[in-house]
Image 1 (cartoon, rainbow, N blue to C red):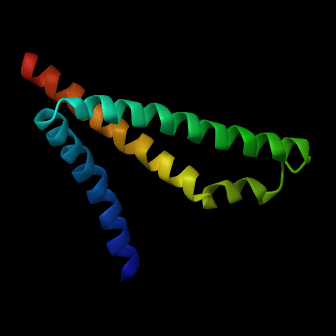
Image 2 (cartoon, helix red, strand yellow):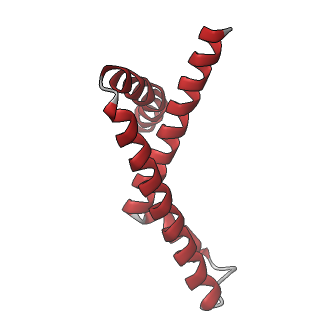
Length: 103
């Protein structure tokens, strides 16, 4: 079933991609700055898209409509949100590794 493969791919990706980010940032130190800068840009874009969409819905008095769900169809919103999630897992893995190593 295709749905099962997609679900497994999403779960595996949320583990494998942050692990790859950890490897890359240990191998090439300047990538830490790249990952951090990309996070700042993604959070700004993600937040702005959400805020603008919510403002338009409130302005148009469409609060109880399903129009807000159209936000999830925005590819830029989805891409920046995905990076925010992956980066968060990456940082949590780094923090956990550091605490485990220092313990």
